[in-house]
Image (cartoon, rainbow, N blue to C red):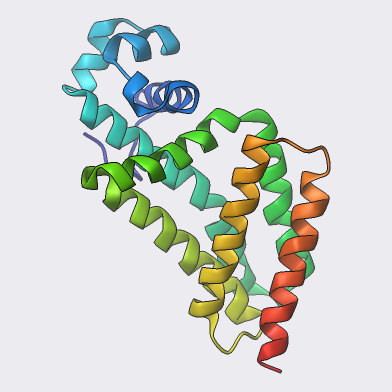
Length: 197
């Protein structure tokens, strides 16, 4: 099985199909047959790559982790090449999420399903922990660039609020999500940085 950063082009449709099923029906809804139907592939194509349902689910969750955190990581790493601009960073972050939640909501619902799955079954804890850790590291880079004296601690708070905002939007979509989320995160970041002034 490929790791989280090495999903082949051939496996990517399987990952996306699995995540859509998780988003609609939860992890228990994933079967080889359901993924084959969702991806428009033969059952043999699925079982060739993933012998067990657990392997398929784990690979899909790792794929979701890589996919979702790549954007924030790219935004944060880009800050090392120029003077940090908090406004531009928040615009990029909330803009990406606004588009994602409109076009790919099921994939993000799958991430929250993974949180619940980890609470019930420790086999899913590693991928969820990696998801949180990648987010915290990426946010810490940005907050450090903004002048935070405690970027790791501040990143934990920032990510917790962002996760809550995204969950609310998935549960009860609002037209003003981008504006409201940006305002909330700007207020939070401003307050955290003011503590250090």
